[in-house]
Length: 330
Image (cartoon, rainbow, N blue to C red; front, side, top):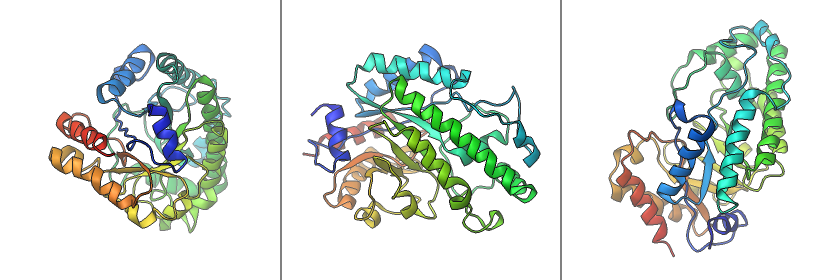
């Protein structure tokens, strides 16, 4: 099978010649835009012979002005209605177009988007080019900022999330028009559904914006939902209109075996990016591939980590062991 055939077979629920494999990490700030970004993505793809490519999209969401930070509900009035052609978006379209031209349809690409809540959370602090694999249960001042905004004026926060969601939906449509095969939408409810934000905050404030973004990507053929953190309501996300769902089944849960019979999208996961990849042996990494396939119980799945990994911490030998274990599966 070709790489594209292999991935699409799993999306249809069919067994490919072997499980598709992909994994991803953030590149250096010098590789966020332009030709350096294109070269970094293609070098990563070629080094590991991956079956699909996640375009990392670290250009950032447009801010009203350089250095702008949202610190109160009143600040959210500064957020304009964006049409998807702003310089930050155009910079990402340029990377997508160049990657697509180089790949000539041989490998599917999916472009990273952070949903409206995560985007707002990022806007509550100065822009940072430092990206690390996300952790669980760690207090962040930005969460308190949004909670205070909700206390100040819940309607204003809801309106800002809707404006951000509409902008991301326009970007999603533009990314596919530029040559991407879909989007990789990152969502996270354990930042939202906390007591101080009110009961059902995610459903009230965020879910509709998620679905609007996915509607913007509806022409894609590889739309993946990434459930970041520790999902509080996995079943909600397992109903989203996407082709595949990715999450940290090993350390955040639920296990693949717990949801394999009720998750509607194809399953994409099985590897522990926080613990086994950086700290395990090659044999332990290879065993995670086999463990994920056992958990799937015969259902075809895509092998991947539950989130980004730290390339400075993960030995090449561990990635080579994972690639080898996937290719041993008949």
